[in-house]
Length: 70
Image 1 (tube, rainbow, N blue to C red):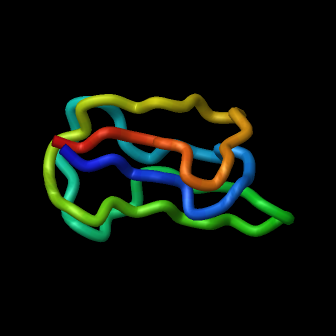
Image 2: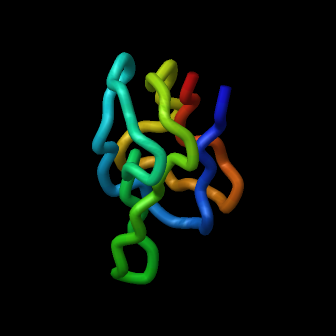
């Protein structure tokens, strides 16, 4: 099980996967918006998205878990 975590604080602009999706290592899971920049957040391991822990529009702190990949 892998936790995909935010690399910086910002607003959750877009979630690009949904629960049950299969993802490859390096694939974007979500896009954060911080200081008018879009920052993609990718998974480090391949697997299936078990759970999305945030919603679009949420404020995310650095290190917050965005998704769980199995």
